[in-house]
Image 1 (tube, one colour):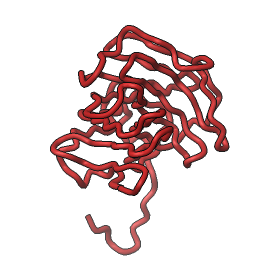
Image 2: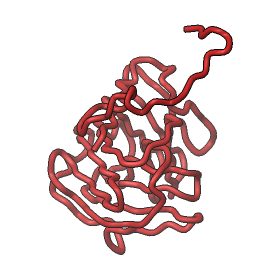
Image 3: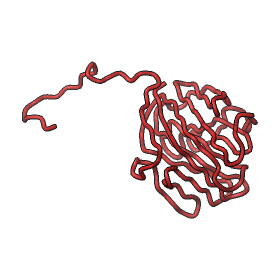
Length: 204
């Protein structure tokens, strides 16, 4: 729409529809490779769309990497389906929220062999908030089975659920705004490939 010359335009909040709890803010089934997620490859990892899902492969040991859609939100609920397509079950995969840069973000991590944790990077220092190490849980489907992950970043409350079961919950006074993302990682054994599908971001 082209407005005529001399027309003054002012923001009117009452014209903007209020977002309701549970409303989808962003979603992606990764069928289209131009939906905004990072596409990258180097000697450490590869992240790209692949046949209707999103793939992250990590080629080196003791490495955590992530991919972002370049958005910025405050309180969000994130959901995604994910599975190990190849590589060791001693791995990492999950979600990010409030990503400001590579040194400042919140992460929700799982492993295929049944562990979870919630943590943060603040000024480059990693802190695991849920415990001193990842905690064992019964709800993770092992191997290459699909897991549904839900991460809630709502005010100072951070919650991780797996396949409908609460897995970890903490409070943190971290930054309250930033990007969201997908993560994958390795420990001693490299070569993990994690797939993601049916990602959604909802209003709490």
